[in-house]
Image 1 (cartoon, rainbow, N blue to C red):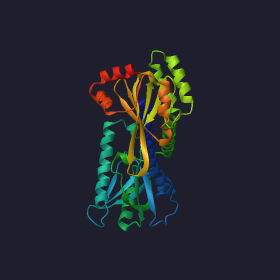
Image 2: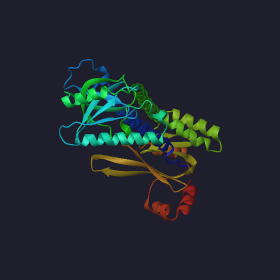
Image 3: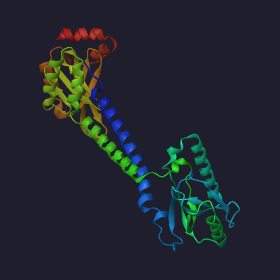
Image 4: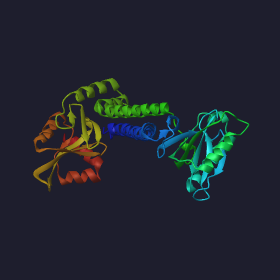
Length: 350
């Protein structure tokens, strides 16, 4: 009985799963890598600024847009669309700072603010408790008019606890949506661990698909047979031995061989025709041989063998007397056009 692709289909599934695991691990790692670069080698966090003489430094502000209210101010420099805002940088709204956004960035700033406010109106406010938005930019000198605005805002009677950092940051990086919300470094470490776990799982699947490939797939075949224990024992013994020729195992009962990507199992008694086929190669002077075997189901397989392995035909002749050996055109015609007659002829001759 020929069994097509016993092992390869399982290998293919394992390799596909391993490929998906590896791709997932790569995507997760790249996502985390961006966060690591920002965390370790990116702009200076505004919380780390201890000196006021930091003009030109590239910094990062983490702010919660939902804390509001927002103090908007026409900066009066550059295009009319340029804006300066005073925004909170702590949860208690006690520490504020000015940010300057120009042109397109000002529009992005407004769009982000509106998006988050709308989101807060449709969701529970507690869901946004720890959400911060990263704004990145360069520290500039504060203009006189803005300093004046600072002073006016500081004198507001309703809140005497407000403090302001006398800095203004020209924003050049505004997240386009809620997707731009910062991710905690602990989460990034967990995601990195997940990526390494996926790589380990992929490696395990690949190794498992290669290790003991014959016995695992053959056992599956034997479990479906009517005499499982006997069949498994005999095939297990056969596979434990060294193949007679490359990728071919034979004994008095079974024949197993690999052909390209496929593994086949045959009951010797079901073979009706065996012959050698010879061909010439354009790349070598040595002849190429094929051990051709036909079953009662009319399936025929040709196993590539070398000139030194042609003795296998004599071995098969000794252990199997119910098959037709050799080749002629009349037998080929019968095989193709009158297979039932061919089978009777092959059995009758032997």
